[in-house]
Image (tube, rainbow, N blue to C red; front, side, top):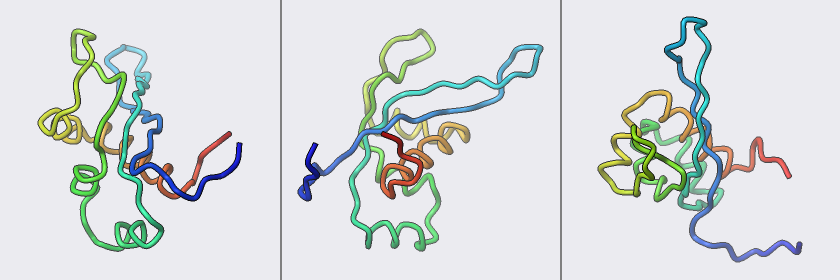
Length: 112
């Protein structure tokens, strides 16, 4: 596939959330969903990295949608600012979202 310089204003990438489980074995639970993020330029990425802003504040701006994120009953959770803020208030989810954004925005850790 030929590389296109013009890009859509957003990109999607898998978000992996790893958190302690509740099994007696002490194993962690790994979940995933697809996050949709604002695409940023190299200069914008440098500004984000050096801004001193919290991950939560940055992700509130950059996370603009998702797929395959469910509620406690397994129903698909529609994207909204309220649900976004609820998701980002969970430390393990925030870490997964921030890692996915940085990997997608910078190309670090991407595989074919």
